[in-house]
Amino acid sequence: MAEEENVSQPTTAPEEAQQAVGPQFALQRIYLKDSSFESPKSPTVFQSQWSPKINFDIKIRNDKVQEDLYEVVLVLTAEAQMEEQTAFLVEVHQAGIFAAKDFDVPQLEQLLATVCPNILFPYAREAIDSLVIKGSFPALALSPVNFDALYKQQKDAMAQKPEAGNGSGADD
Image 1 (spheres, rainbow, N blue to C red):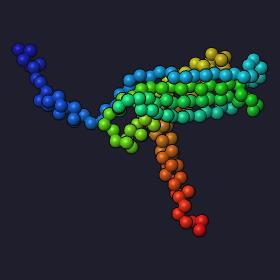
Image 2 (cartoon, rainbow, N blue to C red):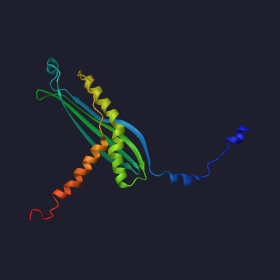
Image 3 (cartoon, helix red, strand yellow):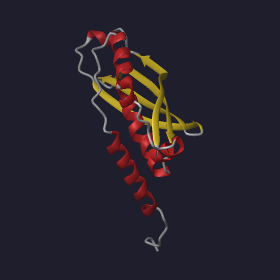
Image 4 (cartoon, helix red, strand yellow):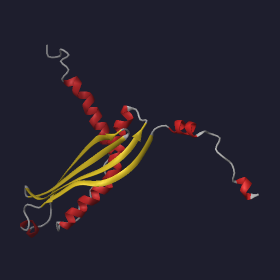
């Protein structure tokens, strides 16, 4: 009798179920594409009190690998300066392959610029911290990044650029 209760089947045909799903997104792979660490002033940098100025830069790029498959690369660069000299410079290219199907162009653009980097950032942050520690420097715990806000700033800046140089006759 228990077998009869578990016999219920979905009433939707497989084709109908696929059509009802909508856009699909999935992480395929995360990998370290490139990394570098330089400490040009070693060992003299270790002889002074450690109070660096940290400069941090973020870049995101993406490439279509094949239909509905994209590589997103998050490039993080951190430089520690002591008295205007580089104590260390570390760069990590953390990459991922993401499947994205049935998104319109603006949605796909935002997905690749915000969601994907949010997934990659913890891995890149850990890689940077590990390289810095292996260089015999104190741990470098990078603060979380709001990729949604960065994307909005970039879109706002791009929207203002055509207005500034459109030759609308304001200089005439």
